[in-house]
Length: 348
Image (cartoon, rainbow, N blue to C red; front, top):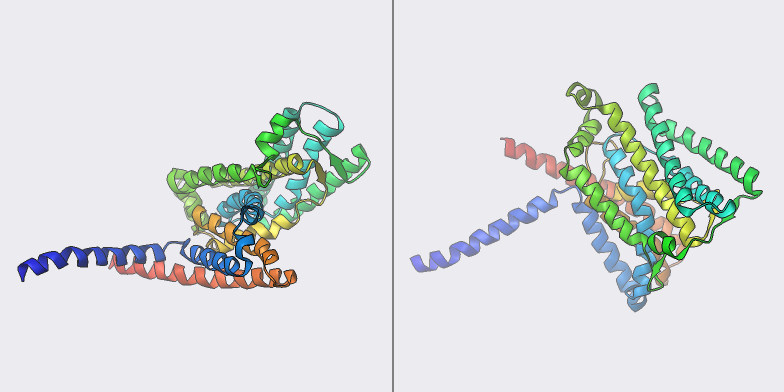
């Protein structure tokens, strides 16, 4: 009997440990987005069949995920901090056209054009952060204003300099290989840049002390300032990260497609926000994770591209994405309440 108890004890312990582990994972902020990703992938794998699961199928949604994902990461951090940035829709084409005009129209070295394009993003980000701090106007209003201002300036200068709303650029093989090439003729090199960005943002939010500052900023800005957190500098830095990331996507786009258009970034505005919300970041701020944002981006990209591999009307793609967004918000609230309930029990 004792021997039997000795044999069963480890099994029972391991079973209890497994249940505890599953329970802890279910209370993670990215739990809902992971379940959504698995469900969406299984759905389109079933309906899309071998074509969806082929290299071309993977490339179709990974390429989309990489571009949106680079933008969604800083947008996620801003939303965790209780802020918003809609100006990315203007920064992407502005940076693309800056590179195209400097290195394509005027023929200056590509490093000059790329540096200037990234500088545009940093400048707009600094401007947004500065205005949010000084005016105390909601960031939604500030960034809408800066978006239209940047769009107007981009259109005006492009027509004035190039005489049209689009400018072409033929990059050198070395620059194209680094920022705008296709691996195997299908996978954009931007995918690897997205991975690097995700690792960097993960370290920033979840490992470095700055991550606690960001969560505190989204929880209560006044309390965070009273606790000694440099809230104004942090806000400006987050907006500059957002501007830089959007500019990076703009630079990579002009090198991939070898042309830039004034209205080339409008779809990124709400698509990036949807990726972040699907990824478990609260609209009210103070909660979220980089892993969840990555899962949300993959989920959005699979739905966005997977519809074309099925017999479903492509026009229903927007309906599915809208339903997915509503479901994600409800699931995120459910998992957040579970986490809060678990934390309250532990305190008792």
